[in-house]
Amino acid sequence: MTARSARILLVEDDEIQGEILKSLLEQQHYTVDYYLDGRSAVAATEKRQYDLAFIDIYLPDISGLDVLDHMRSNPHYASTPILMMTADATEDTSVLALVKEADEVLIKPLRHSEFLLKTKLWLDRQLERLKLKEANARLEAQSRIMAQYFSDDVIEKITASGSMMQPELVPATVMFFDLRSFTALSEKLDPVNVADLLNIIFTDLMDLIFSHGGSVNKFIGDAIMATFGAPLSQGNDALNAVRCALAIRDSMDLFNQVRPAYLSENIGYGIGIASGTVFSGTVGSFRRLEYTVLGDTVNVASRLESLNKISRTHVLIDGKTHELVRNLVECRRIRFQEKIRGKSQEVEIFEPLKLIE
Image (cartoon, rainbow, N blue to C red; front, side):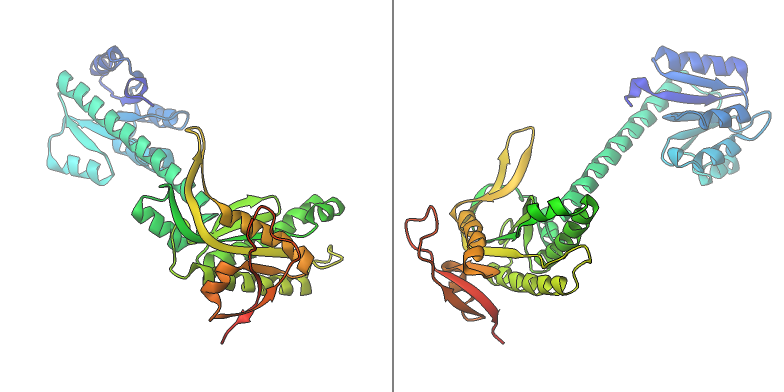
């Protein structure tokens, strides 16, 4: 709605006065539906939506207050400006109309300039209400999207700081989780079972990531990339990531023990964790921006996840992560004959076994 495209309901039993008011409004390019009685007005409100209403209190069939009650009982008219008109200047009449949620009471005879001014004022207010409602709807949609990727405490901090997307280099820990042979498995399963399986596993994983202070950066098919320390640090991000990985390991073990009947064998998985400096911020164009983290740390975490296949492990961490958690997590060194692809120097690799009591 724009102010000039507004549709206005006018209810006035004095036909001469009503036609004058209708003409004034139409001269301002408003669309006006004019009725002489209350029942016709009530029927009209059930067929179409009005942006503003002027209703005479004293009508020949039912009271204008009854029309007001009927409109307010309709959710569509919960915030629509409704102005009552009356020649009764007593305080009781005005108070009763306001109690019934009229926005204003205009005393007749109406001055035409004031009538038009009131029309513009209330339509402008209604337009601002609609803009605010749309903005709130967008914020709610954005909040729902954020809730898919960030834990509640991270969302709260992001919202409070207002600087979530500022590009910067930050120390962080990156985790990759991937389901093994899921493409082949998907070809054997009913699509409903595939969706059910992913929903069960990913819901548990996201809950564990969030509860350990992490954020889900992106879904990559049947894989998840999570970050600890970006966009905001919890202070012990590497430890949070390793604790989360061990919790995921326990969760997957439990899942495989009680796996659905449509699965003939256990679900395999791999987790890779690396710590270091990452680029944290938005990438893209003005049409679409995406928050992400980039850098060598991300590549190492992804490669470690793949190396679980060779070492027949489920969780591998790099040396930098090990340095940050060595006093709190029992680990064993894993050695590979070849260096990590793309790395000129050897990356120390460890398997976290359990938390140190």
